[in-house]
Image 1 (cartoon, helix red, strand yellow):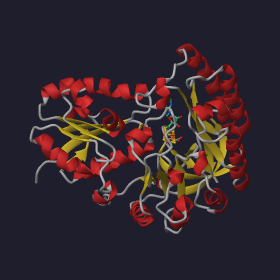
Image 2 (tube, protein in one colour):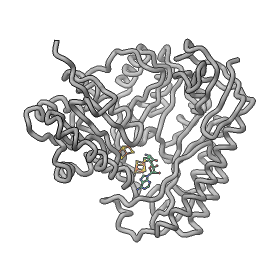
Image 3 (cartoon, rainbow, N blue to C red):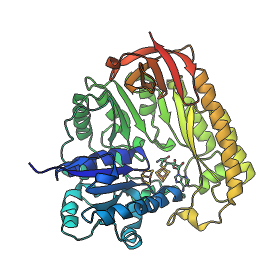
Image 4 (cartoon, helix red, strand yellow):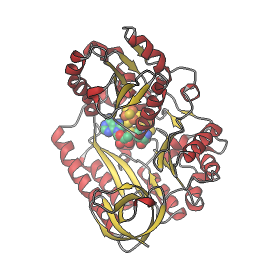
Length: 435
Ligand code: SAH
Ligand code: SF4
Ligand code: F3S
C-alpha cells in the first residue's frame, strides 16, 4: 500500500467555502490524499479563499508568505489557491507569488484530480472557467464516513443581483440551482452518516429553482427525509422571500425559526445606489409578514456602513431600521472598495467617518443581541448537542434559534436533540439544564 499524501486546506469566507473545502478534500481523496491539520507535514496546501472585502483578499498573500520556508525545505510541496480570490485574480496570483502551483476557481474544483496530476509533473495548473458540466455531478459520491450531527449542503450557487458593492456575481457566476432529486439524495446520504440538521446554502438560496415550487418545495421534500430533524437555509435576499417560503416558516416543523435576511442599509437613497431593488419600508413590511407566520423567529442581518455617498442622515435611517426591526444577531462591515464593481468608481468616504458609524451601529446591534439572549433565560429550548464543552461534564449544542447552549450532560447526548431550560445568558451563548 502506498502511504497517503497529506492535504492541508485552510478555509476563508462564507459557509459555501466550508462546504466546497469538504468536497475538495473528498475529490483529492481519490488521488490518495488524507486531510492533515497542520501545514508543516503537508504534501499539498490549498487555500480556499474569499474576495468579499479587501482585508479578506489580502490575507491570502500574507498566508502564502508563511509557506516560503516550507516550500524551500520540501520542493515536492505543492501549493494551490482555490475559491473567490482564485476566480477574481487568476494568473495574477502566480505572478505575485511564483511558488503557487495551482489556481482553481469555485466552479472548477471537480477538475482538481487532473490538475493535481499536472502539478506533480511540474507544470502550473490554472482553471477559472465557468464550465458547462455540473461540478456536483462530476464529483465523486460523498464519503460514507460517520460525521457530526450538522452539515452544510449547497443547493444554489452564483448571483444575478449585482449589488453595486459586491464581487460575488463575478467570482461565482450566474445563479444556478441543483436539481431537487440530487439534493434530496445527498441529504439522505448525510443522514445515513449521522447528520440530523442540514443548512441549505446558496449565495441567494431563496432564488433556488431546482424544484418546481422553489426553495419551499425543496424544504417540504426534505421534510419527508426520515432521520433529518432540522432544516435551515442561508443566505436569502428580501426580494426572493415568496409567500410559500414565509408560510413554511409557520407550518414546517423541521424548518428552524431563524432567518438571515440581509438588508445592508436603511436609507432608500442608499438602497437604490446599492442596487438592492427594494425600499426600507418594503423590508420592514416583509419582516412583519414573516413574524406573523412565525412570531418567535430570530432574525439576523448584514449591514454595510460608509457606502459611497452615505450621509449622516442616511446612516441614521439605518439605525432607525435596526431599532424598528430588532435583530437577534447580525453582521456588520465597513464598506470595502472592490475592483470591478460599479461602486468602486465612486468617491469613498473618509475612514474615520466609517469607523465611527461602524462603532455606533455595532453597539446598537450588540445591545439587541444581549437583549435577545437575556430574554431566553427561563425558557425551554431544544438543543441538538454537537460536542463536549470546554469544562468537564459539559456538552454544547445549538438551540432552534441557533444560539450556542452549554449544559451539564453525558457525552452520549451527542447527536441528540434534548429539551433544555435556559438558566444563564453570556455575551455569545446560553447556559442551561436538561429537563
Ligand atoms: N448573498 C448575500 C451575502 C453575500 S456577501 C446577500 O445578498 O446578502 C456577505 C455580506 O458581505 C453581504 O451581505 C454584505 O453585507 C457584505 N459585503 C459584500 N460586499 C461588501 C463590500 N464591498 N464591502 C463591505 N461589505 C460587503
Ligand atoms: Fe452580493 Fe448582492 Fe448577490 Fe448578495 S445579492 S451575493 S450582496 S450581489
Ligand atoms: Fe467570500 Fe466568495 Fe463566499 S467572496 S463570502 S467566499 S462567495
